[in-house]
Length: 436
Image 1: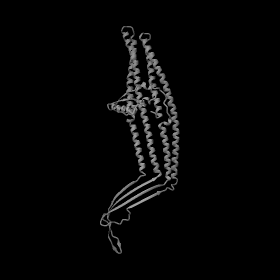
Image 2: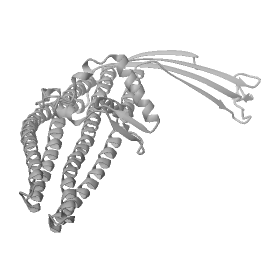
Image 3: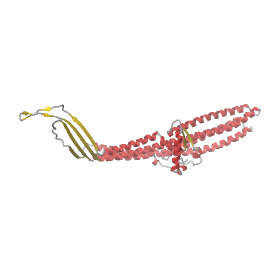
């Protein structure tokens, strides 16, 4: 079963847009009419998980600009006012006392600075890599959302198929029950036969009510996976046969190397290497430029004595010389972090390869079980039909018919379970390959 159906490959952009518009209109009316593809698209657009992932990307974007701004010009201004509350100094010069008034003064200071070194440059590169990591996380979240939408969508179809098989069995059994009731009235059949069939019909009625509840639960799970309001009604436009009959159920192709987990681990190695480079730049120089302006305004008759020049500029080159091994130890730690990241990558790859083998085995086993259970169901349906005819002409007893019907119910249950197994096994494998 290939869930990425051939039909979507030939749809034009206009048709897709029209389908999305119809879906949005239906959603506004409290009802969603969905294909599997439109269900996955709706889930991605409305998932709270995806909104959080998008916000994390925006946050990483702003962190990048923060890193860039550390190398750009920074300007600060200081405005102050100082008063001595009319204080006067009376120094003695040449035997005479003089009076010096200390006036109130206002200060305006402007400082502009800019600095650059290797660590700041590498920091910008790291912030860009952080954005890519968040985008990978967003892709992983999208994969999870699509997987949930896929399994929920197919679960509704399987639950509906389960109800249909029970309804078919009940309809056939009810015909025989009605015939027995009529024969009982004219004395050609025993009341026990009618009672036994009635009990069997009651069992099927209970199964039907349980099937209805399962359908509602499956739809609730689908609505949750879609991120739609709880009161939303959903209508699925594709039948189960489309996925299990019209398309060949096969093992999907792919590689664990394309999985989100491996891409994230590869990115983690690159980040660890970049952090190692960052630590080595601690040995590098820092070039800085600063400009200062200082202006004073005196509030009084006489200006004070001002020795501060209004304009100053400083160009500095700071070179680290000795740190008692602190920088060396930091570099060694970052180098070990690279080795750790590489080891974790290799270990995870081995684990995913084992998981891939297990998932392929599960899918292969599920497909074989599905094929055999489908064939068994068809045979039991045929046996049940023949048994009904024999019962109607009196060649078998009601006990025999009930036994055959119970065998049919068991075959139906096994068949429905095999559908779930195929769906889960293939979805897990597609999720591993990042191919949903």
